[in-house]
Structure formats: C-alpha cells, structure tokens
Image 1: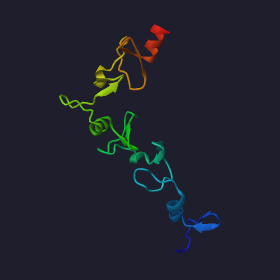
Image 2: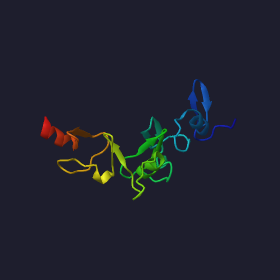
Image 3: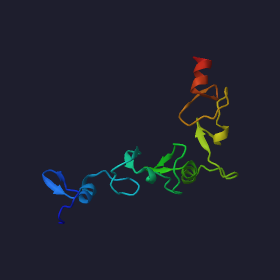
Image 4: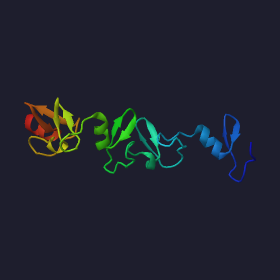
Length: 141
C-alpha cells in the first residue's frame, strides 16, 4: 500500500510490488532462518541456506570440514548426530561408526592395506577385512 520509492518496483503476473514485499512473496526462503535468499547461498538437504545459517542444529557450529550429517532433514555435526542416534561410546564419549555390521571408532575404521581412515560408504569389504577403493582395486581387480 506504500508509494514506490527510488528503488522502483518489481512486477509479477502484471502486479507491481516493492522490493521487500516481492522478496517476501517470491524469493526462495532459507531453511535455517526462513528469510528470503537473495545473494550468496548454498544448496543442501534439498533446500537453500544462507551460508551463515547452515550450521549444526544442536551446537550452531559451522561445518569447517565441509561434511555434515543429516537427521530428519536437519544438519548436524558428527558429535551431535551420534548423540541423537545413541552411537556414542560410553567409555570415551566419542562417536562410533557402524559398517558391515560391526562398530568402530572412526580412528579404527581403517584400510587393512594402507591403514588410512575409511569413511562410511567409501570402502570395500573382502574376506572380513575393510579396504579403501584404491587398495581394493589394486589388490583384487
């Protein structure tokens, strides 16, 4: 209902709107804060996010390593994901990884050949041993 100022107006379907109302009605909304996304954004979990809003749902820390865990459509750091899942070691308080029906602390989930740490979903199993993709291919293909 206000007069258009120096910014002019935006038009959609033949109807003019001020910038603020246009963004509120038509711009994609950030999954974190629900404000319109107009500049820098990232796409994750089938939504768009302001970079500063894409943080662990629990501790609000950013994902400096670039990896995150998803639970019920929300992002979590490794520690809080495992706390919610009940996969924290009672003795040391660190997350436990489950792979091939066995449980590992991340530092023990390693390639049987090169001894580098494996990541869930990026390993191969052979004769009850775990291998990274490269070592598995080198040894068995």
